[in-house]
Image (cartoon, rainbow, N blue to C red):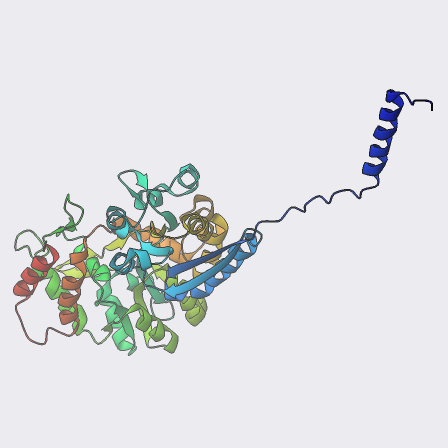
Length: 413
């Protein structure tokens, strides 16, 4: 038998192997699995009156990031004025994102509730300088500026008051009493009561420790003494045209017609305009009679800020939401819906904002305002003092003794 050459055998085997391999179905390429969307739950604290606006902002935020995360945002009403105290009660259980008044930023940062904002260049260049300063501690930015309108001024109904009438509180009270209506101011809040002391030469402020206060409101020296201011407040309280009312009560009076003027801020402009229409007026605060002279009423000023809890379980998403809430577009929306003055430079300089009577009044009052920088011991002693005066000092207690007690409480360590 004839032998087959080895190279022919090798060639046949190779061919058979190739045929065999070619008959196998191609192996399936594994499909790429898309990563599951992250589930993110965030809690937001904001002022009760801003809930409708915030819910609209949350909806746009969820829609924008729908492809990246399953976002669940829970809103809880929380006063911006005492947000710090509630948050520091339990940081780990506090909101991820929260709105607060700028006078709380130093304490929140010192307590570890806020971390410095990284890459803050865009915020600094797009925000009013005063708002950046208000959101900073020692030059470091700790919060997102939201509004630059945290001050107060006078609202009045033009059908009752002339431009001349609103120059002095005395005349306004006369007009209100004659019309059997009211001019109101919230004397249960030390924030508003500062108006009587601020331009008298009597002082209050923070000590260098950033926590305790100094206060000379009980001074017995100088052209205007503490008792002069207290007596002036008693005279105002005695007028049938005056009532101490909270902000909520003031607005209710505007709506039912019993209140024709009052001290408040831009957050109420829309509601007041809805009630008074074209008769809505806004101006700087009037003067009041003290120690035989007319004293221009003062005001505290400041900004509203948005903070991110340093203990948030989702710090990156919390920061995204804070940026979204304080974006130029949403600051414009806030002005449109709530009349609140933007901290964003472009939004603040828009024709719509510049044409607002409330913003114009706030700017006029800013010449007589001071950035709010007081420690936590300021509020209760002043509110107790002014609440007693609003009631007419029913016990007849010495005004000097009451002022001394006020100062002792304000300056307590």
